[in-house]
Length: 142
Image (cartoon, rainbow, N blue to C red; front, side, top):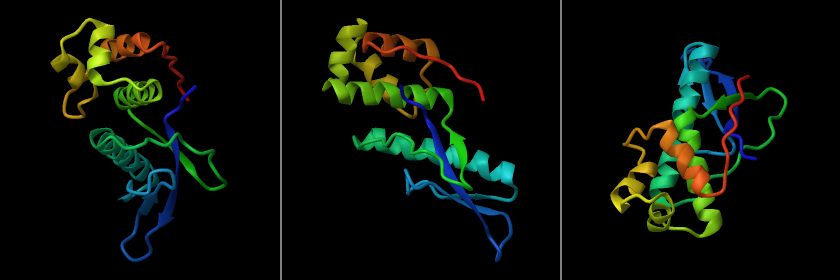
């Protein structure tokens, strides 16, 4: 089971006010917010950008560590989490986008768009891709 809720640290920014947010699992995801709520929202955007960049560059996506004392969880948006899950399943199975296209009976252009961060892939399409990879989606609301 994969979850895409990453522990983040919110540190008070004494010089400028607000909070600086960092994520030990994705060190490139650094952001800030004026309030705790704004900082968490900004963290979710930074995590999304970091995951998208890793997919574009063909890099590993670490699964979230267990939260430590004082850390908060920031969740990836549903679409981004599902794209990350498709990407991880493809890497785990050694599949290319062409392989995914064949499994889903799509042309290669359509299969490439599934992981394209600039393309807003619909949730049912991502769910279908995960099914083609032998995965199932479970939604958890916290």
